[in-house]
Image (cartoon, rainbow, N blue to C red):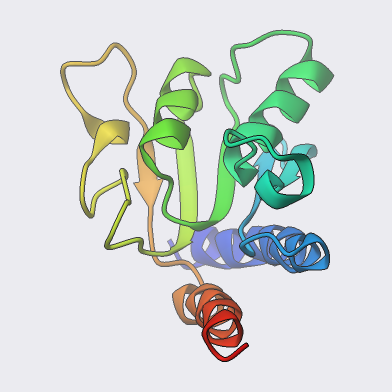
Length: 156
């Protein structure tokens, strides 16, 4: 399990780098990557709602779209999505619909999380696909990025 934990932490580096890139456009710093079964990066995304004016431009959705385009199909079987914040209901729905089997996330979202905190869409037994969830990977670092972002907004 320790090796898996180190792998998840290394993958989170990639998602955190994407989150930091979101700051360039004034977007909430959330980043995501989709990795193939062999660990190859298939898709990346960061929040782009402010940059594009698209309310669905969440990091997870963009990473899933990018990965599906690279794979050439909508099913992302065998892939892992790594994201800095617990997915919301929209993103959790996209994860289920894309058949992503594993999600690794950093910080919990106690207000809108849909992967175990407020809702648990990823493991909802009434749905046709269930996702293995690995929460809290580099949680403090991911949470600090968000706290600093929102703190700077409140102070300006």
